Image (tube, rainbow, N blue to C red; front, side):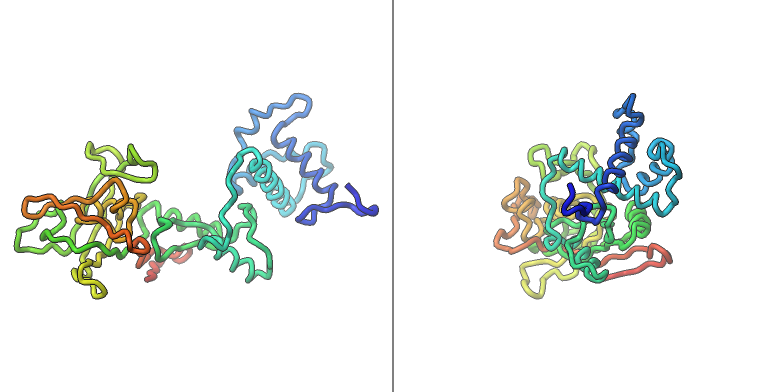
Length: 326
């Protein structure tokens, strides 16, 4: 379309002619030869991430820029790759029927993006395209868990930090409140009746629940994923409520709901405020005391899950020195 003889531009300021050029490049990228299109052949080979996608464009210049008088220089090629990638994202969205993305102000990730955009002088909402990404997720917390998280500000830092997490070089320490148990120690620990065990390590295998989609369960047959949790009593009579115990938990492995399942099954009671593994969940904690079985349930009146990511240590992505935040 044209208005008063002027070329119409899109939201990003690209002219109609420029948009048509990208459209032709996209056709060549996906279909190859227009006379003998082979969509399946090329679609399956297109990378889904921006970095590999850009290198794919570089390798396939002959097909994409066929008929051009000259190949674009490296800077222009990078720009064209980002334009093509963003356009594919837009086209995929209509086919996938994906839900509306979370508003930036409703997540820590989105809020950090907003701060970055503001500091860069951009008074607009963060872009949902990975092309424009300036904050990168390294790891995750349960939505009900409070505490520390680390984000990367560059894709290179995100890659290095992600490798540190996968290789177990990051140390995480959590604090949790549980109802004070009556037995001398958690049931999987061997201790005499006169000895109160104040620390230990719990190992078990866990697998997705067979009855509830969001939950995990102990894999008694040894299947599932192995998990290891080190625990320590910080306050056996929590100063704000003597009927509670403050625990320090260190997950050696990083399984979903590992700490919540560990406390509910082995530490004598669920974490306070845990509606999934506590009173309103199918799994109520059991422990033995004086040869009798007691059911200990989390208090549903607790406003939130009392699990906090208290300390985080990991190697600096450039200098490799260990940094600790608490």
